[in-house]
Image (cartoon, rainbow, N blue to C red):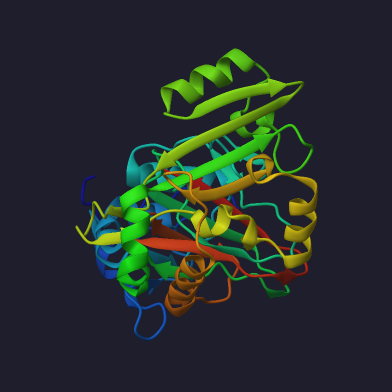
Length: 339
């Protein structure tokens, strides 16, 4: 990426002309902690409606360095990006976007490889998690932009994954690290995603081949039913910092993450091995309730949040920071791209 000093006088997708600026864009943005005591930062332009793509093009490795050093960067006060603009911005920083394969939540494709954020009912909380940490292959960087903030609530909280790792008691960490985490999914009950939606195909042979290529045990059970099992990591060493980070979705996949009434109903209708989704230690033994409680407490202690404003863009190192969603009311539109 080359260092530039002159912005092009082009027009953004939102109709406002990009400003022609003849100074180093690295100096056009001020940086401050996202919240007191957090490593995450917020960047604010000193020039009104500065296009983030123009700033990125002219500021060298500034944003990449901020992401690597701080883990999460909120861009606030810049010119807003639509889906196409978010894809351009994310591609310029990382070189390319990845698709959302082996899906675990419902999303809509908006433009190319830009998606809506998880489309769960607004009254539900989405627990903190690292994107696709239930797999052996995950995105390195997440990009989120807010088109419409919720009338109330709807924050996307963040949690420092190294902080979560440090807060989980040593004996609990040791159990998870020794065994890893096994994720079990049962498709075809009409509950949760279908295997067609998860794997984005109607071809059973393609699903079987995908699972074989990705270390997933796939078992066709008759009718339209499919059971998958995969054992993957509980923790990883951050590529950016070298620190160990908590990196799994055991607490989210486990049936106890659901509202109590929903968990009771599922357990009354399905055997343990037949639950639509569940998690256990990698050796197949049940997760201890006290271990899950410690993990959830660690996330809660590390959680930080700010309300969305229209046009906000958040760049997240997916290993360094977990993210989630708080309940909300009113309309809310957040787009996601993964690199």
